[in-house]
Length: 233
Image 1: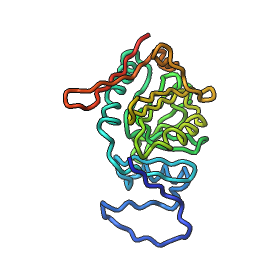
Image 2 (image 1 turned 45 degrees about the vertical axis):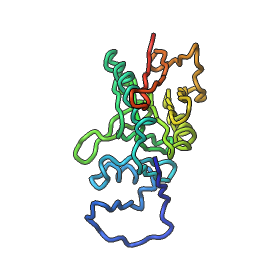
Image 3 (image 1 turned 135 degrees about the vertical axis):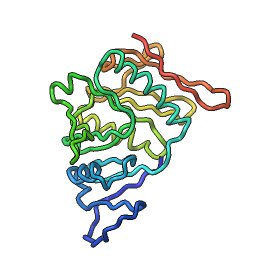
Image 4 (image 1 turned 60 degrees about the vertical axis):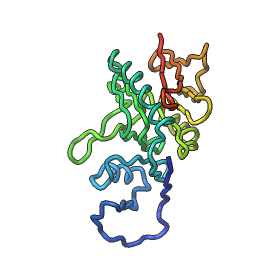
């Protein structure tokens, strides 16, 4: 996934108003967290444009997802984890597009998946914010569970920048999946120092979900990858 990094303008320029659908105007104050949130939640921002704000810089993700190392991974993981949230009524689970903001960590972005437990909503650790039409459009605070699937253009972001930012934001568990190589890299980072959970007999334990997980893949009939997220406990 290719990335465009937008840095704050050095000088003030007069920009014409435009209704051109192909033009994306970046407001000058979008390089502050408050300005970024206003822009992303406004009617002027493209509905499905993945974007991240981190410490004054804006990242736009322009390329499509790789089918067999990103999209094909996302589907079974979402079905398994989302199924657990639904079956055991754990809270809210989302895939793609949800804006997640943490003011203390100076970050706002669209994780691949988000999980929020009922207790975090009840105690105010997480809350929903609305736009001008009173529609809930943003999760603010510290979600309990986040997942990112690594693409060619997101390695540094997912493995370094977001790991640091999510830890600072108080996210209790962060999953990273990198399926681009010969072996799948499947990691859980936990809140206490954000150390990686250790495999036990091939399984990783999630404290948030109170289950053990194993991610595997095999070739399908046409040679593409087919993934499975097994769960026990």
